[in-house]
Image (cartoon, rainbow, N blue to C red; front, top):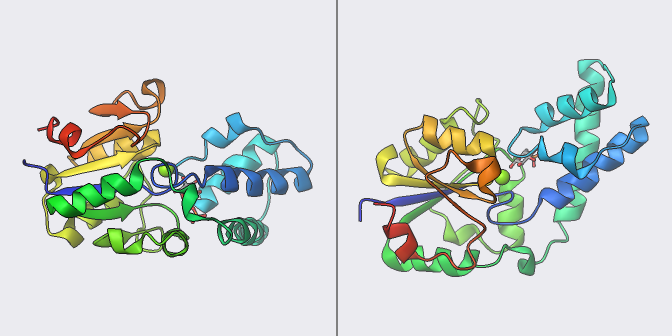
Length: 216
Ligand code: BG6
Ligand code: MG
């Protein structure tokens, strides 16, 4: 098999943290006096914390100073962290652990490529850290997806070429980032959002190494 490494986005691929991001952003919006819906929340997938806040303020039609924005982003993050600190391993998405085990046994390298600065906390909380050979998170990148930086750094850390990598992503910006980096990409979710990926699957429930091999 040509595939030597699998790179995983975290939020929405390994674990369903989107609901906690949503609750924390919604609380903030409500305090600022406007509503924030699940549909609005779709726009924040894969997007950095500060850009998410900008989108939220645009939805509410609010303009604020940079200082105030930093304060609000911090408030949101503290709430988000208070939710994820209570997460349990049963919140890992179905099929993820067995697929990661298969990769380990097959000697395929693994990395996280996430925009989240909370990635290490989530992985520790869910006992997942040891499944990954490298963790590239929001603290280690300067360019947001769809820039391929996060995945190219992942490939470099694993000492493989981009062509030898497959990226798993649930956000359109993330799929674009993988393609921009010259990598193969499997979308996690619906074709309507992720149609440009090489393959789209609903999740890892019935996805195995055999299916991955067919990408060659
Ligand atoms: C991405 C999420 O993985 O991380 C986004 O899809 C989130 O919704 C971004 O805004 C940044 O996360 P954090 O945890 O650093 O605020
Ligand atoms: Mg994601």
